[in-house]
Image 1: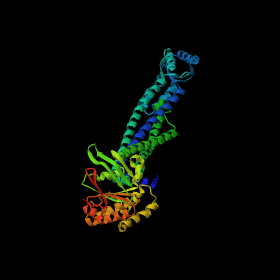
Image 2 (image 1 turned 45 degrees about the horizontal axis):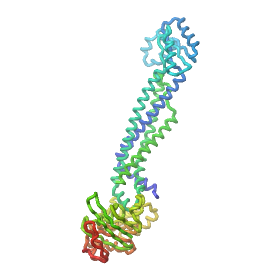
Image 3 (image 1 turned 90 degrees about the horizontal axis):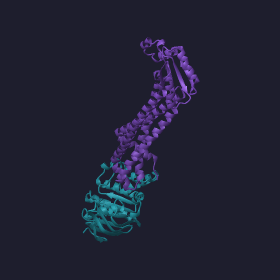
Image 4 (image 1 turned 90 degrees about the vertical axis):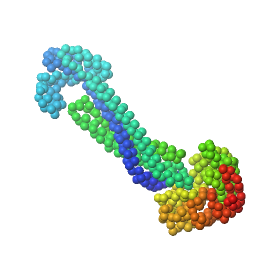
Length: 297
Length: 225
């Protein structure tokens, strides 16, 4: 079949001009849905990255009573040293804790003023040998029962809370994105149907003189493809913006728990191109359905 | 060239358009299809380029049973059949030369062929001077000449004309008939549906008369009634 490229491009360009508002609406919908989908996937990746870092590090923190006697404190220390289930720990004394609080609350000096090193607890940051959440809980419970221990916070609880939150959020955003993507496909279908309708006389003549269905079909499907592609390409910078938002979270000291909440730039690019591909597929399928229905009718 | 064997066509299960029609048209013949509106003339034509399928019977074009033609081959059948209509079916946003070129363009003919064939056919129909006019700048007769040029530019084996003079005054109609006659003399089979008594009587060609879907008369060198 001799389909000339210049013919296809000419037809597509004139259809774009004819239906500029509808084309714009379609492209915007494609962009929004692909951006949402891309951002949701990226968010999931970032959460994965953040939690992976936590697994290598501290799993729980043992806070001592602020007024604990040195004897009781060294009992805890000995117990940590003697336990085969503890692979290592860091001792944070009152002064170090105070320095951290100053960092954390640097923006609100009035809060820092009421805190003195004496009122802050010393703590042990513990790395257990076994990082299974159940084991960590068991081990934490052992220290929670020790005299002189104020409380034990396991990081895994927090991490699990984040994971739960994020997977729920991620699922919802992905569902919204898919619904929007279907809406985009339907919009493309309608745009192409409008284009077909405005050119029905041409199509009638084309059929009459023996143009093949593919010859009639290709310019319209190409139009849908281009709409999907443009939507996808615009989505790439928007997905980058979401990624920048992650690094804002990451740089915020008060959200120390989320450190490592970041995604490799190459992953962002890959995801961007996948979204462009998805846009192209949605565009081609939407327009293909429209054209087939029109030509068969 | 054309053969219909016991063809019956019923629309929506009740409107009988053709009833057991059998007809043979030889290569190079000129045939008038006459009869009142709704007698099945248009259906006869539409069956030939497979715009409609018969409910019973078979239709042959150039020796091939077109009922057995897969749908993807239908466009290639239509490249051998030119069509002319009462309402011309020209594209209003294209000039004369673009309208004719369009017919070649969409069947994938190379640009060089289009460049040589289109002016030649416009010369044949006598519209060389109006090549770059738009259809609404032409008279009815001129528009019909453009539509004939478009139907004939690809040198089809068969030319189907559905009341081509229906919208034209008698003098202009005669001009169109002269043109169709010339096309017929090149060996193209012409089938023309018409209500125009004076033309049929003047031309004295084969006449096939339809009435309520049945062929009631088939007469060579016939008249309208």
